[in-house]
Length: 473
Image (cartoon, rainbow, N blue to C red; front, side):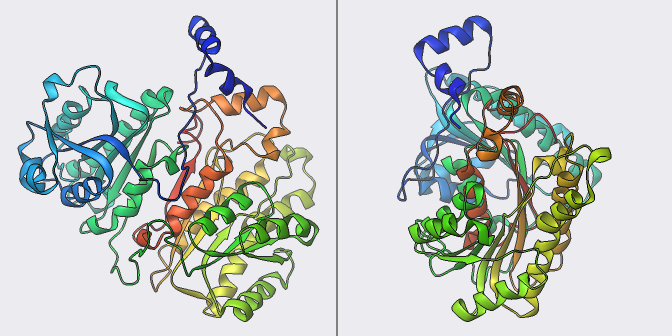
């Protein structure tokens, strides 16, 4: 369903009305448009605190993009660590004389070297004179060190403090359609930053804000993307629940990125499923994932036709809403079976038979309801929170370069949300920093980022695709 309010407020008369009534004024978000589109364009300001760890990687990445790179003129550590002015054709910027007219597409700050809470002042010094100059649909990305890897309590407190900073910044700049993210690195994980920085700076992350991603150190074998336009070329992907909505969008985005996609859904959806599969040169597989023989049938198909699988996206899910006291037992049982148990059983079957290839990717779809809970959805919230627990546990167990991550969508414009009463639907759309609902493609782009060969250091993360919803954390 189209968001008529969003369309109205972006007309001249609509802008006048919302300003006079102090109503939310969401902007049209910039999303990925074409295969050869640069991941970031415009002016990017790159700053750092003491002893930055990721400056060379960041400077290399941004200077090789379509953006114009700037650095603060007074930051000695920045010049020394990256030699920006000479090696990266960067431009020095007088922080005391930025001016109101200059607009930045992105502000990127390397805070990975902060070890003491007094050093947090450098975060203020960088963002205070620049944040008002962030452009429409701009990006803020902060790089830190994972508090779990800090050697002192002061360092851990300092790095954890960055989370509160980024989440608050996201809420301040959301009215511009801009987003803010935090990347926590493990020591020595600088070379694993590329895919995450690319994603967060790009239009692909349009509906992701206020999120924290942990990057671990990996051996790097088999994780070099040969093609930024189609990084999944040669990969085989399984997407469950692919006949419509988010699942259909996931299948299309993975195919766009080069993967051969096996689209799976229940037999009753076969007509729509074949339509999706045929349109992306994929394969349609009808199967009930809750049947006792379901996981084996799926594994048999993948083995027979492809000798294995590289990417497994567990998108299939259902809702059976009732308050707990009025909920029949089959509502509970079926929701848990589809949304949680089936994922475990399919993964177990694939790994037992060694069909999930080296450097494979597993992505599970959770929900904001699993994080914050929801009235009348004890079964659904239980299943989706269980997905998070499963991902966090499995991330510690998987070997051979295989990773597992999750997305937790918030209000996404689908057939399900279109059927909501208008008051609930409008509340769901506006109760986030971007004041609008997301699109299925926003979830799909996040899943594609997890699947990227360069995302080998991204493991055990749960990213909320919710526009920084005001519920949850």
